[in-house]
Length: 181
Image (cartoon, rainbow, N blue to C red; front, side, top):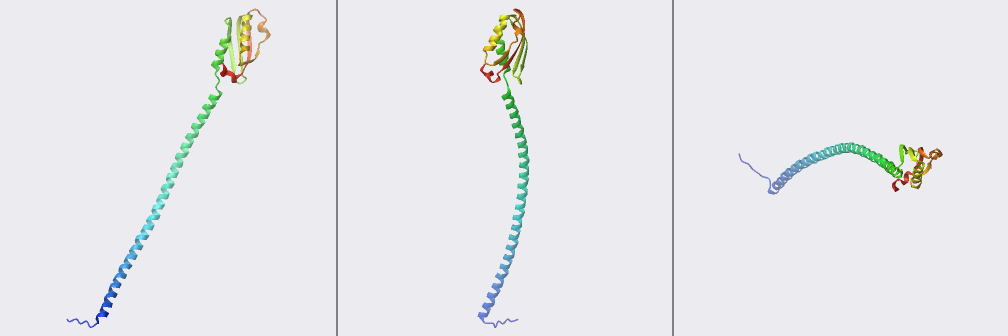
């Protein structure tokens, strides 16, 4: 078989260029489709990742809020405990100082048989026995000289007897001056 090619060279060249152009158009078309597929898959991956990130962030926030609520309740409990302890400390009175001060003011021949200290009424009630009236009067004078004892109720019956005197005394306490003892 004999092939005859009677087409002029310039047309042959144009035909060859058209074939190359078609080939590049097909390649460009395939590349555009490929790029479109990759872009759309990347966009969908981006949205999926953003959605996952949002869910994880919400879960962490919920867990953090749960921990914060737990920590908050623990903190509130600790603060309440501290407030209770602080209130106890602020209301604490050194009763031992009062008892020690009273014992230092009691003369040798005076015996105390009953002491009642009432914080609410800020009073001390004392009952006892004195061998001599003079010892009881020394005890009363010692109480009068003190800074923390006020309004000493010393009934007249306490001094009617000269010897073997049973007595009752009621004293107001100035609790703010206890630290001065």
